[in-house]
Each structure stands twice: as C-alpha cells, then as structure tokens.
Length: 156
Length: 271
Image (cartoon, rainbow over all chains, first blue to last red):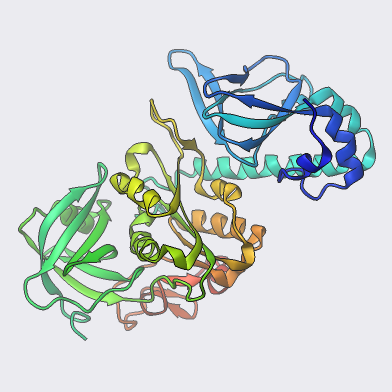
C-alpha cells in the first residue's frame, strides 16, 4: 500500500514540509498497523527504518539480565519512533513494542538518508529529528530529577 | 471573616489513604465552618500542639471539606496520622483559585503532577458539572510510580462525565500497561485549539515550567495558562511576607497565577 503526500503532511512531524519534499518522501513510506504486543524492533538489530505514530502507543524497552524486558518510555499519537537508522552503526540501542494497537507510517531509513543528501530536505529533516531528540533528552532529564520524591525541592 | 485568623475546629470524620504516604481527610466543622471555598484555594490546617501547614482543598460537599496531604514533615505527618474522630484546626479559605473560563466552547486542559492533582480536582469537578460549556476537557496526570497515583477510583467517573484522562508515570511497576514518561510530553497528543484553550497546571515547579513551555509552543497564550505556585505560606492573610514572590504575596495574590505573570518571577533564583 502506498501513502500520498497529503497523508504525510497530516502527521505533526512532517506538517508544514514543502509539497516538493513530501513528494520525495512519499515513495519511501507506507502505512503499517501493529497489534498490541507486536514488536517493531529489537535492541542491537540492524536499524533500517523509522515510524511516525498515527494512533496508539509504542513502548521503548531494554532487556536487563535478571529483570527481563523493561519498558522505558512510551511514544504516542503524533510521535516518532526510531532514529538509530540515521547514524552509524545503524543498530537499535533499544527495542520497541506496540503497547496498544498502533497505526503508523513506516519509512525506509536508507531511502530517507539518500533523500537527505539534498540540502533542503536534509536540513528540514535534521532540524525536525533534532527537535524530537532534544524533547526526549529534556524529558529524560526531568525524570532524572525525581521531582515527585520527598527530597529537598520536591513537591508535597 | 470566619476562620481567617483563628483556627476553626473541624472533626476528621473519615480518612481515605490514597497512597503509602498520602491521605484525604474528610472534615466536618464542630460548629460554624469557614467560608465557602473556591477550587484552587487553600486552607491552613493545624495539628494541635504540632504546627500549621498550608494544604490544598481537594473537594467540598455537604458541609464537608476534603483535604489531601502527603506526610513529608512533622506537621503533615501528624495530620496524616490523625485518626477519624479527632479534631484539627482549619483557617481559610485563602488565596485566589482556578479561573474557569466564562466564555463557552473552549478547550480546558488540566495537567497535574503528583499531589498536584488534589487542588485541581475541584476545578475538574466543576468543569464536568457543566461539561457542555467546554469544547473539550482533558486531564493529564503524571506521577512517580503507579502506586503514587491519587484518586484512581474516580478516573472512570471522570471519563464517563466527558473528560479525556491520560495518566503517565516516571517509573513503571511490573504490570503497568499505561504511559511512561513525563506529563508535558502527553500534551503533544492532545487536540486543542490554542487560541481557545485554558490550561491549569499544578505540580512541582519545574514540571509546571516545562508544561507551560509546551503549551506556549503549541500556541496557547501565557495568560491562558494558570499555574499554582507554592511558597512558604504562614499567615494566609498577606501580613507576614513569608510567601513573597517578587511583587506577589502568594497567600493573597496566588496560589494560582497566570503564567504571563509567573514566568518572569520563576526565572529569578533569588526570589
């Protein structure tokens, strides 16, 4: 199944992208659905794609010896799953699993990397992915603060 | 003003444990009670012989006050452990609470972190009591762990009354199937009309800053974002100055302040 530029523009991650750039990306994308519990990828496996979540929740997870697979964070509607395809060594650092039924747009990572060789597309997507990364970093830092604990500066 | 200066005796008629360290006290006055309380206002609760602390009101109905508090110090521990039948003192109500918009058709977003849900609950209750007044009502709740979530038994009722309720935790426990992450992250998933959105945020100050920033990034105006600020409330009547935040005395001018006023003050470490 194919997906057109209009559908791509309907996702917050790609909203506002010029039509010419959406036309380049559309052939690299396809809609994909996952039932609850279906794994999108495993840690340390080759990273060759990314997903835009249209509906549902995806959990990033990691396997800990003695504790099993531990969920770290969920990514919901409008979110982006996966950026390891963008950087060497192109392997997943974490795993991802559908926590609910999930509707996504799945992109071919190598194809998008090739498309990003075009300066305009490359700059647009790099900024958008950086925004995602920065948001996740800031949210992770917030969690590190343990704001809801009982230490000094905590809220009670 | 009844109850502003001298504690009014209230009996603890019931205590509902919410989490391992948080309880909701149901209070009934022995005689005349304090003045009616508005959502977001607070009272000073007095554990006789121990001390007095500011506590949010998490509900009021049928002459009862519901106050939810977490045991983190000597006074809150004493209040937390107060058995049903015992008497405590109540002063208040104090401050300015949440401002529910008069204009119809707006999106109402409430974002609570930890025990910050307690002072938001009366606003949510009031909003759901006239649900048709709003285009949407969304409640986002963040907590440290699933075991730290408040009012869990009420969530289904809020949803049935027309609220979208999203719950997220920082640290999932085994068996948790819900969201994992911070409350501000959930905002990205909420369908809202930024120009017609009213947001109410209560939780740790850093969490409120990040939430407000996320709302502003969506296009919500700073004056439409209300935050509940916590400082060292003592007298409750703007005399002692302990709760000063720049030009504000939060016991009188707050605790609820719009983010347009609050943001520049929160950026000053010395305040």
